[in-house]
Length: 311
Image (cartoon, rainbow, N blue to C red; front, top):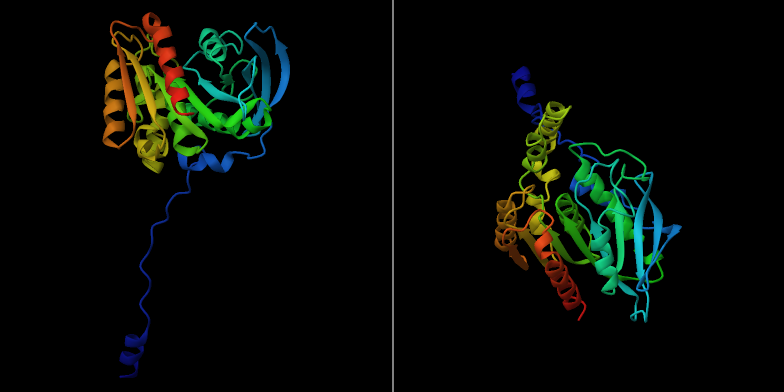
């Protein structure tokens, strides 16, 4: 009887609980913890300017690295509050080929000539920027570098930190979407031929289509799958974080894009609309990945769009 009552009074053992993995340090939800609100942007080199703008190479810290960016500052009467800012998030260029001064030179100049202060960040590992990007985490790492750049914009006296816009071409489109899903400073985004689709296809597609198959391809595929198995695809995918966006967007895409499937652009736009976002889509018949045949038209549409968000 005593043993029975003792057995009945013994408290039940708690059911085992599953232990959730800690967020990956380069998961989208982790990036803001690695942003330094005291980031300072420093002019390190004066470049030849034009009659319309002055140019510099600037440096700033990100993730314990020293990174660099092109800076164009318009000349003339500065608006109250400073010049509005366009951050040019470039697409994939081999890091050893990419140039701070020369890459996306014409696009950067167009915005500066139109009265925008331009910052074109060199992602880690590009030109003189320190570090090496790690696939398949490169896009979130690059987004972190842009977030730290944004954190330092108020240290540029000529910049208006209340009017920040993003241009993202190809891979830079995904970088821009990740940044805008986290930063309240961004007021609008223009995406050109965005290399944005479900993860990991957004990474694997470009490796598959290279011939010969690049060295390390299988390792990248394996590493990507391990990340998904452990953290889920939403941890690294801008495509699955579109509902977090709160800013209006433009999307430009050429129907003859030889690099990013045109269908990716139309699918992205539909997904944005389904998420209740304000998005305008411009299709350019027979235009290539750089939208060369509609380049000035698309940039003028960007200028009109950005200006409308400052009214």
